[in-house]
Picture (tube, helix red, strand yellow):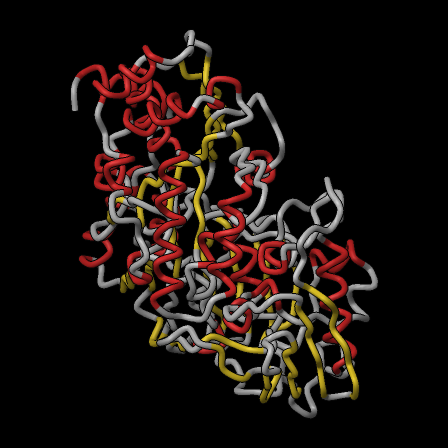
Length: 537
């Protein structure tokens, strides 16, 4: 790294990281203790960010999904090895020959945590609620909207495949859609489709902080940055091993490390790059997830200069994506040449060259364009570590330095994660040029990554490519096979050709666990089943 780059990074990062050697022996009053408590059996997990809400149907953040998945259960769950749907609240199902009707048979004698019964009518009311929430003023794009292509607050329903959910009897649910959608069962395994008690969501505002489901844990308290759950003793399935489960938010990787070593927490997510060796030396467990998320730079075509594809291409060719992947993510992270993880094998044939770094080419493209030095506003989150952005400020600084070297003028716009960063960058805003963000996969299908970004108009990117949207919808409607794979390759190639965004990395992430933990069911999606966590008393 040259002297100019070091100075640029130092000026952008500013505050030094917290070092363990500099920490006092005083407990952090914002962090719950009791990780070693024997009665009740309690497990404390440190999230890298605070959950903005506990209702996963209105936000796609990992922290909300992780907590809510312990309370709310879906009709079907994902097989941890294959990702295919297996029975859960629905003990069986059938699909009509035309692929447009899914009939689920519910388990008997399942009750919500408020004592009401799980019925087909309750499931149908959940589907209708999710549809209503796509039109709520305080909700941006939801998982339901991505899957069913429902309406947004700004528009009327368009091309929605949701046709209704019926309850012909107490145990039978019939979900009807307008077009074939083979990934639907896998999509329904997501936490966003956890079934809640209709009696509880009659009070929508209260439900956002106190969801009521059928899961192995029920809501306890939310105090500051800590959410405490308690075992639901009347759960229909296998009982949780833990009496209490607490999620606390600790934004700094060094602080999370410190509190694990101190014994304040039993585990934490997003292990810092410098902590792997120290954790091993202290006898702590580190479990590394397979890469199942993508980090990318969003390019907003509604921002003046970025309407020019040549300018967008100049942005892409200016960035050293290899330096980003190697410098700010754990070993095993790969440079991303498209938006679909390698396990799907649907990357474009030559997409890597579309995004390769070439400062000379970037400068030539700028000179040939009408770019006149206008500042590009560059949004990035702060006070957070994410699976796809473990060090957002550092990644911003690295990319911004590359862009400045190519001839761009950059104006940083740091936004605290807790100030609803995702909603800030997802709305229509012609003054936003660039934004650091990403996607964490939640079900095993390329549609999980491609459809939310490129399946419909997306204010994040300013994309209005109807031909691309049609390809994405057609790919999702095809069964697995060569035709579908080829179509997804063509989608990745078109995205690269139009330069809608710049893929950066397919990151790996890791969970650190104390010696007290005997079993922890790691998941590539980051949403683990804490009912299967076992600890030593």
